[in-house]
Structure formats: C-alpha cells, structure tokens
Image 1 (cartoon, helix red, strand yellow):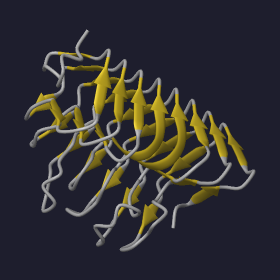
Image 2 (spheres, rainbow, N blue to C red; image 1 turned 90 degrees about the vertical axis):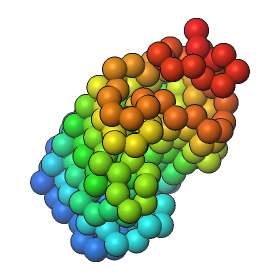
Image 3 (cartoon, rainbow, N blue to C red; image 1 turned 45 degrees about the vertical axis):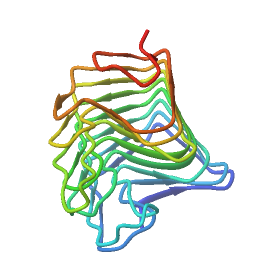
Length: 212
C-alpha cells in the first residue's frame, strides 16, 4: 500500500513523502494515494519505489496513485518503477483533478516514466525529464499517456525520453488541449492513435491539423 492515504474529506498540506517502497502487488502505489474527496496541496513526493508483478492498470503510480479528489501545487520527482509490467512512475490517475504540479525525473522500466491518465483531468502541469525504457509490455512512454476518458489540458511536456514512440506524449483516447510537446528524445516524441486534440504546439503533426 501507499505510505500516505488521503480520502473522504481528508486534507494534506505542505508535507514530504519520501523514500518509501511498495512490494510485489499493490493497488495503491508506493508514495501517495488520493481518493474520494481527498485534497492535497503543496507536497513533495520523491524517491519512492514500486515493484509490481501485475499488469492491471489499477496497480501503478510509484509517486501518485489517484482515483478521485484533488492534487494541486505538488512536486513528484525521482520516483521509480522497477519491473517491466509496471505502469506509471510519476502518477497513475484514474479520476479526480491534478493541477499546477510538476512531474520530474521519474523513471520506469515498464510503461510510463511520467504520468498515465485514464480518467479525470490533469491541467496546468509541467512534465519534464521523465524516462521509460519500455519493457515486456512494449508500452514505453516518457512523458504522459492519455487514454480512456481522460482530459489533459494546458500541459508543458519537455525533455522526456523513451526508446519507443511516445517519448513526450502517447494518446490512444481522451482529450488533449492547449499543450506544448517539444524537445522530447528517443523514438517519436508524439504518438497519437485516437482521441481528440486542439490548440497544441508540437513539431509533429497531429491528426486533423490540431497544431496551432
């Protein structure tokens, strides 16, 4: 389980969640788990490590695992996922709102170095310097994976790395709005196979000419 749980009407302010680890199977991540009406602000979540042997999306989020609530003004840095079937090292968002946060220097051997979001909204965040080396799942995404019903809005996605397409952003569904994707290295920095896009800036053309 995650070292810190904030749910219901819980509140967490100006805290540090560091140097935690999670074992073989955990649905709640290693660092911070937020659900329900939980509210988190001004926290640093760093150097948390997750080991996972399940490919289920509910497992994942070495820094942040989230199914509801609000997270704002937080730093998620230097979190690690250490197995090929792992999901997101920085954050796995399955509901709620994440806003004005930084996801930096998170690393995954499996799917996503930075952020995976399948529902809920991420807005006004910086996703920088994250890395994925891919793995058995073939899902290497450096910056952010957008899928399901997720909304990713007003993001800056820069300086991320992946050996597979999606060094910056991979989108299979959901909505991508007002986002800068630039300077991500490795394979293609943008990999879009579904969803909708509007008012984005990137060196790679988006379907339907959504680059402004």
